[in-house]
Image 1 (cartoon, rainbow, N blue to C red):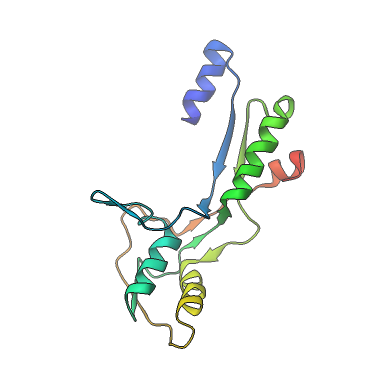
Image 2 (cartoon, one colour):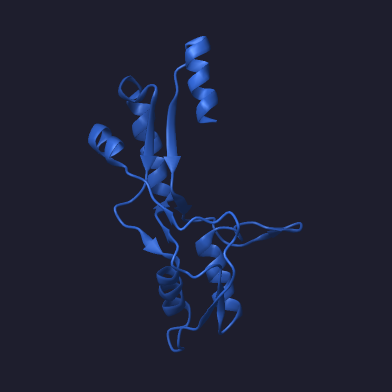
Length: 150
C-alpha cells in the first residue's frame, strides 16, 4: 500500500501520509467467536489471556523470546489526530509508531499470568515457531516524536 500511495503522488499529485503501526492493544481485543473465526486469536495479548484462562500450562508460540512493541489504541488515535491536524508538516511522509520499550512475549505471558492466576506458579511450554514469525518487531518513532511531539 505504501508503494501505491507513493505512486499516486508521482502520477496524480495525490498527497499521502503513512503511519506504520506496531502491535495495537486495547479495548475490543477480546477473543469473541464469530462464525468459524476466533477474532483476536492471532493477536498476542488476547491469545495469551485465552490460553491462561483455559489451562494451567500455556503454550507459547515459538520460544517466547520474540520481542515486540505494543501501542494502546488511544495512542494510535492521538497520533492520527496529530498527523491530520498538521498536514502541512506531515504531507508525503512516513511515520513509524512504536514505543521506547520492547517486550519479550514470555514476559508478557508472565505479567498476564500473575494478574489472572496470582496464587499459581507460571508454567508454559514452547511450541514451534510460525513460519512467518519474526524475532524482533520494533520501530523508531523519532520522526513523529520530533516533528509533532508524539
